[in-house]
Image 1 (cartoon, rainbow over the protein chains, first blue to last red):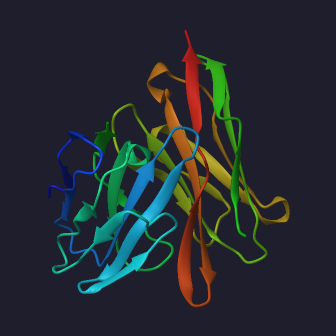
Image 2 (image 1 turned 60 degrees about the vertical axis):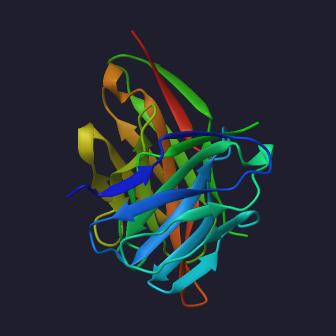
Length: 113
Length: 115
């Protein structure tokens, strides 16, 4: 099993550009989520999905879109990049239920100039 | 609002010394509790979790944590620190709110091991 994979590992964007961060998992997990990690702020939830075709907003959704057309894939789209979106982005997946472990991808380090 | 507090953004211990990382949460209902570890330039991985049963939970790499309901705490300990334990540690709590599970993260504690 590859687990949770994310591409790209690194990305530099100019303000106003758009891009998609890819996330895929091969564990047949229903629940997937996107976090951003900033120094001293821990993990903040951007969007999540409880299954194919179902997405919802997390704590910091502004400026990001998601879709979930398959169980395996959960891409995150930045519509018009801003310097405030410079961060490390993590995708995670798990089985449903609050007692289940989340499996994390290796992260994407994004810099917006 | 529910919260998770990790005392100390940085904790420094000598190699071989006791490691104690503190985590307190604010909730009146029994939660599920987790500790995750993040090594440099990597994603997070589960160290240990408490769901039900025995309140002292053992995890990977010699770490353990004890759920103390009266103190709303879930502190992480390891008897003897190793250089390879240098990483950032995150406490997380799952609460059932309005029929949905909500995962709340602490801000993280960076563990520094002195030789």
